[in-house]
Image (cartoon, rainbow, N blue to C red; front, side):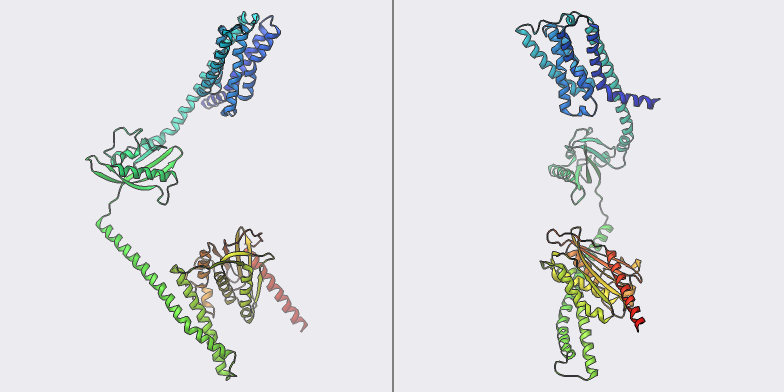
Length: 582
């Protein structure tokens, strides 16, 4: 029953605007029907008086009444009944003046106090205008049938009574709604007041609107009455007040890096300073601030903190020294290695004549081992530079497809020697990028080297590059041994290798993917790995380095493996046909 009454009051509240305007229209129609002997002029005047009723039925709904232009139009239309009554009586200084009261009554019911004030101003201006015009002479000859009849006044009195009932009913509905809202908010208010944490609710100007009882525990020197007091008035002195105002302004802008946290001092009961830690959070209505006493560390905690900070500084210094040592050692090792590789290359190419078979084999091994060692040292040197923040990108604009094709050509001979098929797909459109050419080449060579290293004979390696979602996307896939799911997270960390990588004949430092990830991050990009044991691996590098607008081409990492499967199927079919013909 209570629910039905609530819904009925709510429906009535939403329809009172149209009801009161409909009632006015009914008054005009009743007058036209019951007053005998109305002339044509009288009927025209009644039609004009009916205008606010008709307009209110169309516009006086709760949605349209929110607009200023609708409220103004309704108020202006209510001027007509007053003018009609003044014309019927021949002057505004007559009983017609009472008709001007209909506008504030109707607008108060349709809208509220603001609409009633607007209607009062408009109708008062209209009454003054009609009175000024009547001062110099009669407004018209009058309409005796309307001026002398009692029925219009009875209908008008009924309209005012109906407007009063509607206003009373609407006021009751709004009071009931306010009481329900108050009941709903009471638990939150009680919880706020009894919160164990000192809390303060502020308006947008930083004035205290409410405070929890626990505030007295941390600020016993605060005034007894806090409502309306600026919160910076709790601070000990002017400097502390300035810090509170600055913290509130920071919270208004989003909190900054400290998340709205700050500290200030208040006056204790004995007049001394009490330090507090505070946090302010902006709300639509102002701020909410929490307070607590600044925690003083014990001597043991202070000593432990100092020890931890010293250990942290020592660890950072040791890591920095390690990186600098590796960089220095790697640089020193590269010089003699270049000489070893150069001389062994002379021996490998037999530039000074043939060598005995055993010496020639040793020369080839020296060259291959030196090249491998130089590659490992280069990885360590680059990683040390990155860790020491000494790696600098040399950025220029170029076509990424050129780098991809060159790196593929460099790795093709090695892939063929291991019995692998190497495919390169760079798309049909230019791919201009603004990046470090050397770093991009190193990313691709490391990925291709890993793919070739961990793919058994008869497998395939595919490299693809595309523009996608505003980034350059590079994917290298292979049909190799793959990586277990629980090892994927460790890939890309310095010196970390998967179990399949440790089982291979070719050993490395575990820096290949770490370098790829680090170089990608230096460009603002990232690296992702998809792999499964005995199914192969796909490494995708996404870099935001596109130079200008580039029409995107589709690239899905799974396409790489689809290309690999197609290549392997073609190779198996060709092998079976060759065996059959033999």
